[in-house]
Image 1 (cartoon, rainbow, N blue to C red):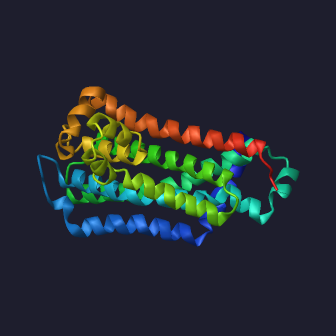
Image 2: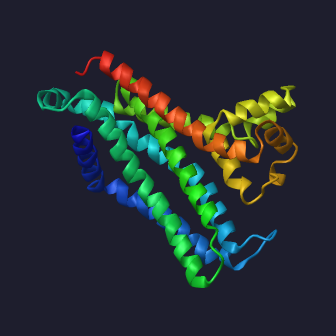
Image 3: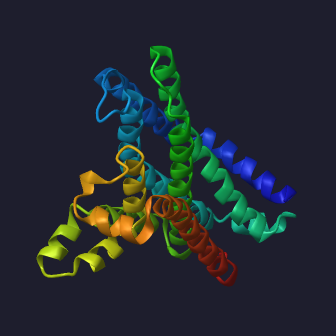
Length: 275
């Protein structure tokens, strides 16, 4: 555990010195400031305060930005060190392979997650200053959703970084993975599949296997408990999962995917050639 902590802190320090991190933090801070300027906190729709609407909008935007940032930055972790030829140096140090791998993973999660949750807390503080009601339970749930989404794509990124032969290949694979999942959101590719005769149940099952869609639907559920915005597909989701069951699925499924992908990456990494 001490070695894992040291490697995590080393990765955090390295990331904080990188220019991309400040751009990344600025993006999410800018998104939240833009939502302030738009005046969402001044409105009330369907009985929900403007702060709830602001948070839902922020999460919908985050759903598109967070995965690609997580993938592009994470896929350089293993393959980048391999290309730099520092594995021999690492193996000469009194640090185990597992501590190095999982330390990098934990450190990267911390630096990716904190700006996202920090921007959301900025929105909460702004809402409190404006005197609107703060939905604390929703905020706790949204924080968990963001953590689950980040962990999921962190695992995917580590797996890609382990099996890729070069940084360019890893970044290309990361972008294609993000694009594929984005296309399989319910209003894009799934609409075409249903039009071609795919049963609705199968289409929704494919949709709910997509962690981005799971996140999107769950983020809507507290604002719209009956998922009216999803149309008829809401009946299938609520009938099979229920309200509480789907919220649990939205939290646990991406986390399980993240552990599964990162665990597979670690297994392949241990069996592979470090040079």
